[in-house]
Length: 202
Image (cartoon, rainbow, N blue to C red; front, side, top):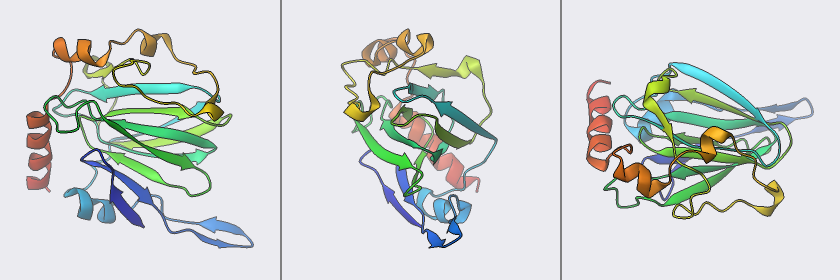
């Protein structure tokens, strides 16, 4: 598999090698050792989630408090989504910037996001199915959101997604500046300290 860092530090695109024949296709969509070589520590898997979305559904921007945060390894098992990684770590050299990866059932790419990064996606097809491996279990008191329509963030949704469909929870979430002013966002120093501690304990 090929792993490359995105323009947002500590986020990676993973492209698996596909083995196809007249029966179908086989591939490794997750290898803890290959990922650990790049990230510096293995993903401490604690929970696996799956979402199924109509075309146009936007989920995110979601993130968790650090520590412990929640690292994510995300792929699309059916259909297609455009996945967004947003740097919401206050003090980061790329704070407020974002990058995207197309996740679909053709190239079978995945995205790894380190703790403290914001995550969102928009479904490009009907019944787009996304599976996540995550490093911490769901803890509603430590999980937060930023409005994905915040013009300061400026996420651009492709025309094939159609009109965006969002939950009330996501549209009621604060914008980036409001979240930063309230102390809700993780900081770059705290994120770096967490990453180093994970390397030391593995």
